[in-house]
Length: 333
Image (cartoon, rainbow, N blue to C red; front, side, top):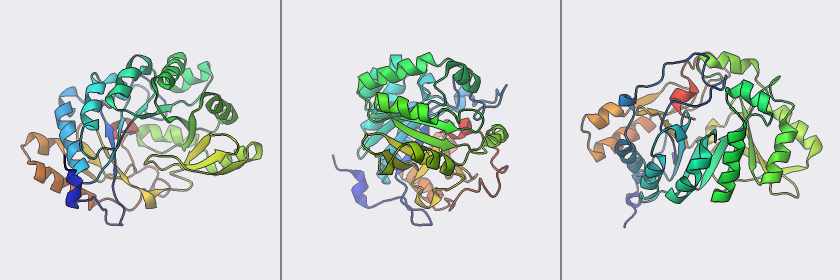
């Protein structure tokens, strides 16, 4: 089959950045309640009739693929709470030109799904894990730690590679665990990614109170480990260092202290069909009305191209931290 991307169509934003990466949220619901993501008592989740169905999702991803996007990440909420995710994964990996399908998950439900997802074409996973202490994990997320550890062990056996641990670095919460998490990743062959908190939605104030500049964390780790520049496959924003003499890479995701907007190559599609052009801005394209209104495939691609032409240059988390009222779970991770 001829790769339709040979037609020369590409997604290039106004600042010359090539958009090659789609973060695809399949649900805004989650089986955990991390305090920095979903406010306590929040019930404003999208109604299921507004979710894109799998055929609609496949159609959108196909349009992106034909416009040069080659990486897709399944996100949420927690993507594993949506039934039949392996069926969607199989459909996406079958699309011409789709080189890389990955998954972000909290791993609570990963153990029973890992083998099917790996067989369906999901090659690598990112797992949210902010603490290795059961009581602290419960306090942060509202859920138990052991299913996450069990899911990670099963993911290793299923053959996912790499497996990346996403740890949100929070002052006064888990800032005494970085060395423990490094040791955990060394022992298990995982990659570690440290992430600064972001002021997203009504939970953003709570997150901001625990903001920790990762430049200080990097200096702290460098006193204990010899860190050298490292690289990792994937389309994300992490800047990697490698612990010399080991395979361990530590990524630093720094949207506040050292933003990465100049190399942004991604957009986000929410479960209700909203295409968000920037995590920290409100620019968007509502795709669900177009899909359910009978838009043609060419029309769909043209709408996407026109949206990318409006992609902002950068977020304004530092300059205007209260501007972003949209929750992360609504946007997609």
